[in-house]
Length: 144
Image (cartoon, rainbow, N blue to C red; front, top):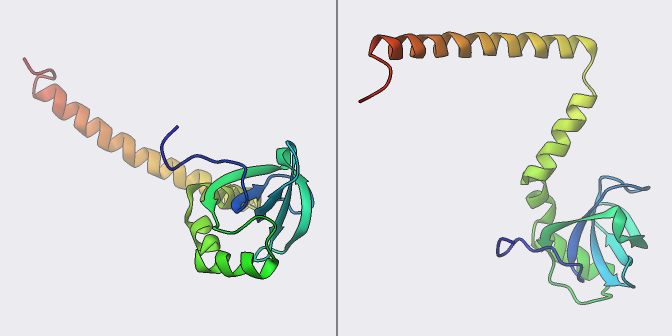
């Protein structure tokens, strides 16, 4: 693993909820109950304190410096101090999720416009590639 990118199940670890009632929200692991369950809370993403199965959570690289079983006020203060919501929105993971959601909401006409834009882009790329290939052929191709 790359140093600094480890994702351990620990108090203060920020997690993305993959499925269930709060799907798509961020939460913080408040305490570890056993091998399969943790106590989570997301004061800034409207996730109530509750136990969740680890299979429903996807751990992020973000971590809050909070003690185990701390109060909501402490979690919220540290969340805002560390700008977790802003960091999450700037992450590649969140951007992919946003792009996927945007694609899902496209209408037929939007999909048609997207197809035409891609065709126009590909035409330009192919024209430039053809010019480069022609120039390479003219100059003899391979260097000796």
